[in-house]
Length: 466
Image (cartoon, rainbow, N blue to C red; front, top):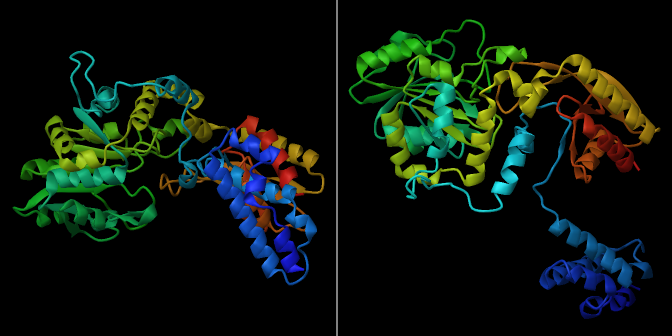
């Protein structure tokens, strides 16, 4: 019977003349369509040969069945893998989902400009070539008070670039309590090795004093570096040296102070009900020579590492050979520049920037959204067990790790379906919904959703439960 089925499988050349395939060929390359057909046939052959229960039958070797499988392969291979998703996890800066949502006004303003040439690395006044990062220097210095600024393609790259440009072959002093490791196995000591600088650890894990830095300075010392522990906190019997005191010591000993702020706050977060985070402007005002921070965390723009500080030092950094290897592209710079404009008026950030809108959404509005979502799911999927519950959200991406944001979520249990399977189906749906699992149920946290996504999520739950 297996041999009979194999003989009845249609030929590739015959399938290429099928009306459905002719329609595919109008939209897709012939080689891609042919490969999908061949792969569909190969998969069916394997299934027939491995079938030990007689499940494969004549209906599996028809043109229609083969083309259905081939069509699924074609859709899978022509659908972009990097696509829109619904974040129902409650983690605002979700690294797996692209961290910050870009402001709509920024994206809208970029669409037309990116369809053609852009003034990336040219001086409009002279017509001569210029440095691409200088397009953003005016706004970064305006917002922070720094003398100069440049941008790398992420903050890890910015850290390595600064150390390579200012301290290669020299010593850099860092407190032991600040030798961080962040996501993706990024470790500060490893970055120092790659930059050519030599790490000098001072103090202890929980307490470092100014005298520890002072004693560690040698003729070969180039800089003192402070690293903000963005993704962890040491609490209890602790002590660290304020940036202002490090600056005073460095000035007296002829050293450079490098301040890595990590998440990169430009405005005080207190106005959004959050604890204070050191801002870039505060660090510059305290006298730090070079300040580093991410562009895609508390700024909420494209991935990038911002470097601001003294003009002479930024020029040395900009001219280092490594700067070219880690420079950002036009889309990154365009998104960052236009997002930075929004910080000129911090009071309007909740209205214009998704990150700050999510941070400042009041509990009453979150409850209302959750109740609307729960009601919509109950209507679309009557057999599902739906409950609106209080939840906890987080900023994410190593920012404010101890800060819990009160939220609301919809708890969904589908009879005869494990929570992991429901979550998997939601992820694989056209809507690509990412939720979290707690206490044997799928939770849809509404802080990271929008009101207009409520009907989509409800309809998707009803669709995938079938």
